[in-house]
Length: 141
Image 1: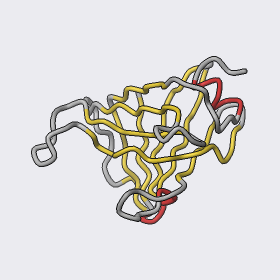
Image 2 (image 1 turned 180 degrees about the vertical axis):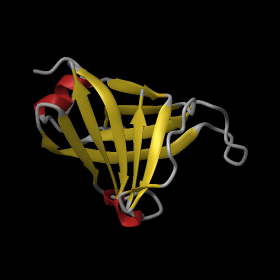
Image 3 (image 1 turned 180 degrees about the horizontal axis):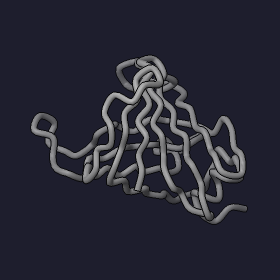
């Protein structure tokens, strides 16, 4: 039985018992159709939180926060609202999750996914994949 969310992810367990992990990034690169469209965004702080499903069911909830300040319109620092995801593939160094189900407005979570890259038993980077817009954002430490 896994004792952390990372252990559950590495084991391919889509039913973690509890907990969360946070990955803090200070740099990211945005890709559109595989082309780098932004270059490095140094000192641009984001937090990716992966936790057991906030609905209490299968999978994980993935949320991205902007650590540089509060959004002027919705008055919080959520960059990407929680998306329900489940593991679709694991290898020794890579874990892929893909969204499933729908949000309260009926939009599919399947348009979203993340790829977690592991080095030396720790997360080195996480890539957000927005499939319907052909966008990938690579978050690095």
